[in-house]
Length: 189
Image (cartoon, rainbow, N blue to C red; front, side):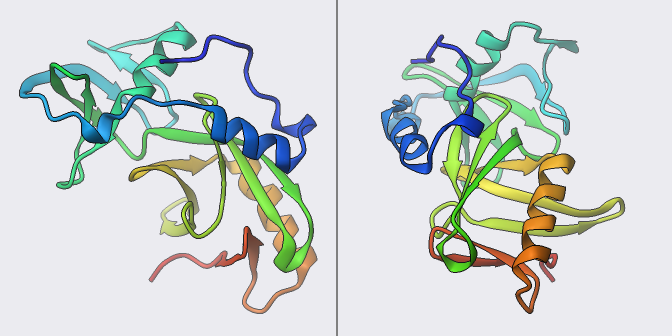
């Protein structure tokens, strides 16, 4: 289940090491579990990535990480916590995760971007884990696909790092390459 080791520090890792960490992480096969729906979990994930139970923030990071491993996105767009024996709804105000760190290796079309989330998932952006940008009242909101329909909103400081990389690359339209895919920084229409 959840790994109780120290958080991954992607700033000190090569992309090869990050890719190995991604491959080594074993998650429960929630996509294969189809238990009966048992109601609501009385849990909520706020837009800042804070998890709540019955209106109180969950203060134990290890508990949040554990719950994050059994989170699943349903075909109707809803979110559930699922085990082999029960399925409970969970309210997610935006997306379940926040990308809090980025590591870039290479330049231009050879660049690879690795993101670490607030629950220590690590993902390399690319064709299977695309970046997307949505226009919002407070400016563009960037997201990266983490796994199986679960996204992370990219934290504002990380977004600024990406924007600077894109400006330095000088592509027209402005955007970034990662793992062989180009992602324009313009919001989706």
